[in-house]
Image (tube, rainbow, N blue to C red; front, side, top):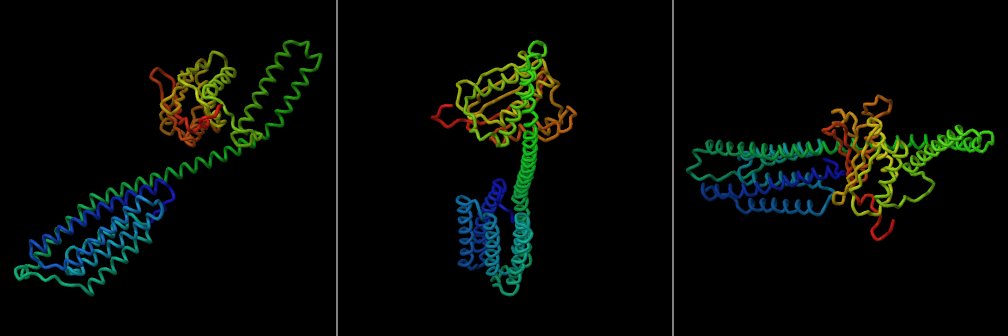
Length: 431
């Protein structure tokens, strides 16, 4: 049977059980109609008490299944298996009092076997086959023959053929109408399982990348500290202070070293190793403005435009990983459009819509089709293509999503949709 550890898989089992409930209600209605026609119109005497008792059992099974669907998330696959066994038992009981194997509706056992083979794992499916064979053996050994009226005894074979035709039509309709829907549920379950496996592989990839980045950041810490000390020593030397051009170069070197140390600190913070500091409390506008100002300073004042249409400011907790992946996308945009990039911030209900627009060549179709897959890049660098991969996974962990596309006038647009609840500071507290 199907393990129900994942919500998507549990939903598939629920849909299959709901489908069987519908099938069982049809079976109850069809059997009542059959009893009415055979016992009333055809005047063939039937043992009504055991037949109606079997219908009552089917009704109770349906009510119990409905209770399982409403109040339980575990054990549904076992309830499904038990319900199918009860269906076999009820059909055996009814056929026992209506002719046994001589009843053309004995072929309905085949429908039970087919449904079990589609819904259950092999061991349970073979158990269904064994239960069906046992039921057939019981009916062959002991059954109550139908007492046909004198007018129908001479035409017993014709009556059997008519019943076989009705049974075949019933099985064919049910197989097409219900088993195809079960197959669709199974395909959706398989798709959900594939998605779960893909997500697990991507998250494992991210963990390994985080460990690698953390190790690299630790290794870079010592040489950066050494460079910072050397620059300060150079600037303190009197003979170098008189050289104005060299002093400007030393200032640039000091700024570059400071930026490298900031990047390393950001990597360590994203990896959870940031000097024991609590997450930074800030506001949405300060968070976005800080990102824009940082990249204006890094790439030039005229490169990045920031359009703020967010509206009323809110308190948030600054997520270093989110800040880093946004910066990665801006950096990629500036690489392909060094003269102009626009950062747009808007609020759509309870969602932040953050877009990055450029004048570059846009995304190739294969990048858009595999958005978020690692190592898909047009830059030709080893290890490239991780920016969008990290962006998609970070946004997904925060409950958001990423949309990418090309603009009609040229260039690309990457839009990040992030629920505000994922980063909002607790209500009633000031940032």
